[in-house]
Length: 192
Image (cartoon, rainbow, N blue to C red; front, side, top):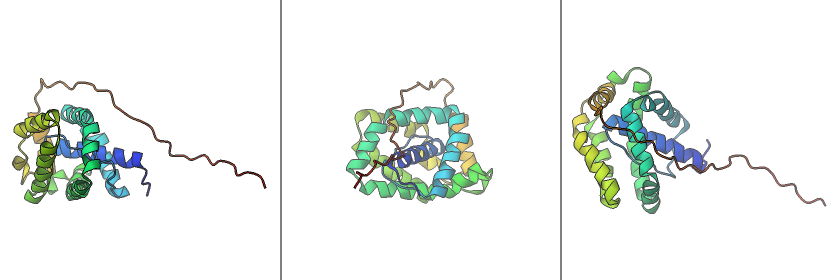
């Protein structure tokens, strides 16, 4: 399994976009958390096929980028929360997988999933900047997380997309990306 920091960063970023569209809010990237290859593939498929194809998904992806530096810093400074985030992601993976396979109506969102998510979102809001806190509060007002308990994954996705404000503009953002080389070019050894 490739455990490069760049790959992990993108995997987590995409995972949080998934949680964003399903829960009706953006969430956070965790720079050093690791998903297994199978889970990462499911998340990337959902992100590419579903999230980015909707105005709501594009909006939450923009919010994610807006706060990415702050979120990375929060989680680097509080590594105990990285494990909590991975647990949340793992709780949602079966539903995400069902959704991308056309079976999202067979998996319900549970009170446990929402409680885990709510607890972490509350912590992020309490630890974050006023701008981050304001964005979280606005999205929780728009889509209270408790509302999703008992919905199927398909219903949650449909609910978010159907109730997303048509006049909410997705502002393009500059994506801060620094490529990290993944190929190491060996340096020749000195001749004997």
